[in-house]
Image 1 (tube, helix red, strand yellow):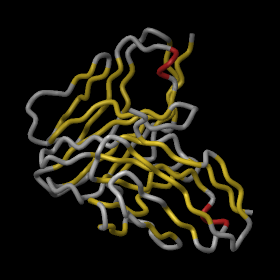
Image 2 (cartoon, one colour; image 1 turned 180 degrees about the vertical axis):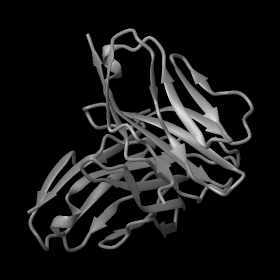
Image 3 (cartoon, one colour; image 1 turned 90 degrees about the horizontal axis):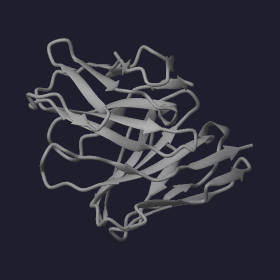
Length: 116
Length: 115
C-alpha cells in the first residue's frame, strides 16, 4: 500500500482563489511528521510547512496552512489567495518515527496551475 | 550561505560510463540525502548519511555508491551508467537536534540522461 497518496495529479485554479491540495497517509506509528514541498518549473525543492503528529494545532506559514485531520490520516495543504507564482508541483511527504535516520517518503505530487 | 549546491546541472552519459554527482552544503547539517525523481513520480531515497563517515542505503541504492568524508560533501557515484538511471537527482541536507521538526533543504538538482 502507498504510504503517501496524492489523488490530484493536476489542478487549475483562478488567481486569488484559495486552493486545497489533498494528501492522505498510511502509518501505524504514533509519532510521525508530515511535510509539504513545492517544486517550481526550475526544479528545486522548496520546503513549505511541517506538522508533527503530536501537534494539536494546524501548522501555518504565511499563506500556507496544513489541515491536519489525524483520525482521517489526512494532511491537506491550503494555499490562501493564490498567486501566479504558486504554479508548481507540490509534494506531500511523511517521516515515520522520531529518529532522524527514518526516511522521508514522498507522494507522487500534484501539479498546480494558477490561471490569471 | 549558499545552502545546498549540486554540480553539474545537466549531464549526458553513454551506457557503461561512470560519473560522480557532487553535493555540498554550508549549513553544518549532519544529515545528507540523495534522491532521484523519475518523470511524473515522487522522490525516492537512494542513500543517506547521518554524519561524516556514516552512510546507509535508501529505497533504491542499486547502481550507486556514496561516501561522506566531510560534513560538507556527499558525492554520489554511478559506476556503470544504465538507461534506467536517467532521472533528476536531488541532494538534500538537514540538521537533527532530536526534535521531530526535521526540514530537509534541497539542492537545485542534476538532470542526468543515459543513452
